Amino acid sequence: MAKLVAIVNVVAWSGFWVFGYLALTAGEGQALTAVILATFGAGLGLLAWIWLARHSEEIGFARAPNRGAMPMQEVDR
Image (cartoon, rainbow, N blue to C red; front, side, top):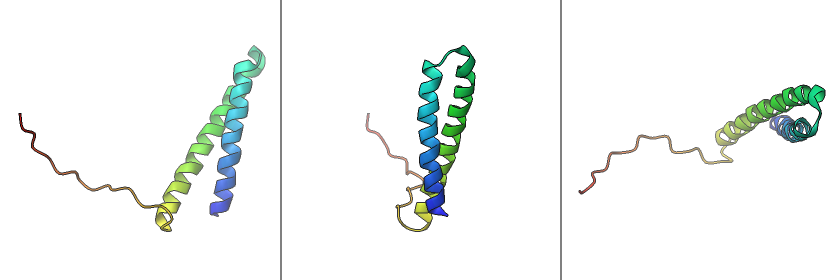
């Protein structure tokens, strides 16, 4: 499953960059379609990246971030 999500991640971000470039260089009629497809690619790529980051923490490949409370420190003035 992780490999499939990784492939989706690469394809989605590639679509974002390709259609983003087309949106910047296309005429008015094609720009809206390219913007919609680029936004879809960015959203799907972001969701896949978040899933992969959480999955790598769960299986122990990546260290989980420290989410503990930070103690208050006194500052001398």
